[in-house]
Length: 593
Image (cartoon, rainbow, N blue to C red):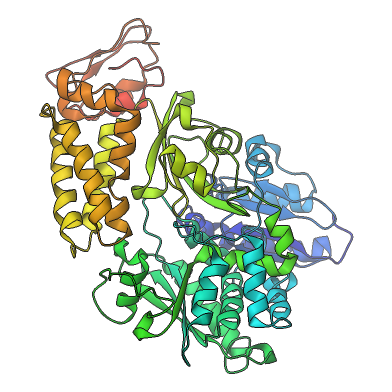
């Protein structure tokens, strides 16, 4: 039993993943149990329930930390309302953690191999509390920045080596200097939170877990470039991020942190949220500005660049959420500190969203220069079901697929481009031996084709023709010359498209042709899918010498076409089989082909 008046803290993950897993029910259960048990009176201190942002290990939600006075936090995962009573009685009142429910050693390994800077407040503070933010260095960065001249602030950012985290990796300080140098009485600042890559949710989690940190980064940028109004362009599919950011903006306005005289520091800055309709192309800065102006989100030719002629023809600076989140920490700790982290070409840390065939999916933050192999195996535990690693898609739908020999590539802007991929916004989709690389190229190309604004012919027509070729190949109707045509078209589209969407959309095709050409050739010449993923090319059967007679496959078969008895090899009825791949996906022993 605690003998101090210091409060007990219950930290509950209430990011989107936490709520989806039942965080609100867990919160309600703790509140009810505290009242029922009279916990505050028994322990002699108040019990604070803090609704934190995502802490990264999203697949294990609901995550709960119990922080007893004078003790290290104890983390529980997969918490349900039914578990709360035991945690309260045994841990909070009895001072004995529930061993079978405590997160396993993988949780500590997941955290110890990271360097959490941007995420340092996510999962540890109440995301909606201004007091919690201020108690954790909040607004010390802007207070330091205003003691410097705007030009000195920009030089500090340049000296830190911070590059834009939105995908292009352009030096942030240089970008700010362009906007600062452009004459104009009115300038705009935009935070690009239009995160649309499949499997990517880094910016969403930062906005949900540390919204005040993003506001502070924008305040520093606004002071540096001489801007008095800012927008956060966030897709409407992020309701929780919008809610928490709007609450933070409203609180800052009420407290005088932003407004006509920010914090009494002598500069003006106001901001608002613009909710986007979810068009992927609006992640491109000129399309994004068109959307804010009320126009259809379509790219514009550059130059002129936004720093010269941007939103409503005024000089405009655009950075993404992660970039602004980094700015605050540069001014908390200094440019030299930030510059000491990472590689020569990429300073600081980078957030990645790990999805796909990996044991622990979620968000990780590692120093630039960490290898992809370390991220997948040391942080995220390796490949699901201990299958063989095949490839990783780095950089979102416009990135490239790297094979096993590319695992040693560093998460560094230049290293990834050299390997045939790109940093992008930070999505990593991990694939194992059951993934067909031709089908993956088709999937990502279909995504970019749908999201194309259609303004320029190479992107509008070229991607459609490439997709038709890939669909033919996956259906077993590929022809001689298809691969050469795909490669030629991909290169031409990259060279002639108007914006970054079209210029990078062929990357998945080019990278899979580079590393997995043999799979394309098998589809075309042999009418076989080596990964057994393309349904038109499938013919299911059980391999007797690989079958472990475990009985998993008949349990998952939706049409009961698999005959099995204990101790016997399973048999598939080919006439009943719908080729749904459920048995293939469920078999851990690769006994079905």
